[in-house]
Image 1: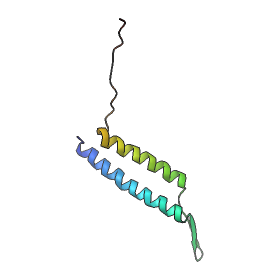
Image 2: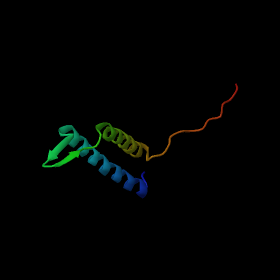
Image 3: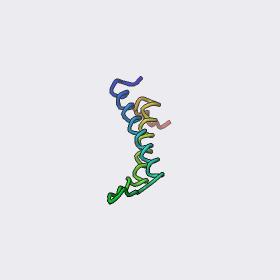
Length: 79
């Protein structure tokens, strides 16, 4: 079960991820363009894709186990 803070964080991550998808699409359609004397160059595609991968991973972690680390302890025994 997710806490209220985790739910808000998950919602923020999903919103940011959607914006990164839109940015990736914009770069893929047109990396740089000029209007009159002004020129605009979009962000680097590899930076956008790295952010997408990171956000997808964080979202998956929160959705699958609430962000908790599933590591456990064990005591080695000499039998």
